[in-house]
Amino acid sequence: MTEPTTSDDLRKTIAKRMRDNGITQWHLADASGISQSQISRFLNGESSLSLKRLDTIIRLLGGGSWSWSFVRSSSIHDNLNRAVAERKDMAERQALAERLRSAAEQITEQIKTISFDELDEDELNELES
Image (cartoon, rainbow, N blue to C red):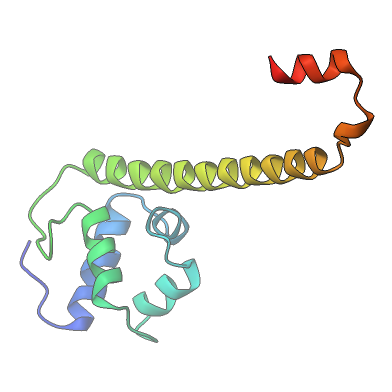
């Protein structure tokens, strides 16, 4: 496959690689972090994408950095699936961090409510150990 030379060629090449490999705009959007509507507008020639976003799409569809060398379609799906998994993993880590932050805040608030003057000697000894 030859390198695309114009933005229209690039759109057609991306659309063809998606079609040839059974990749939907939704799947590409999920893997790339670019909205499906933005991908649609780009593929229809209604808008452009930044070089960074184009590079992301090209890499996900199996090309190197601006290279359209032949890649097995299973590799393209592997690229997309790996990107989706990485995005989900990042979202899960962010959610976990938020839950931990919230739990730490709750514990801090609970500690503030403890009146050490009201503890008896056994409770104080238990806290010290």
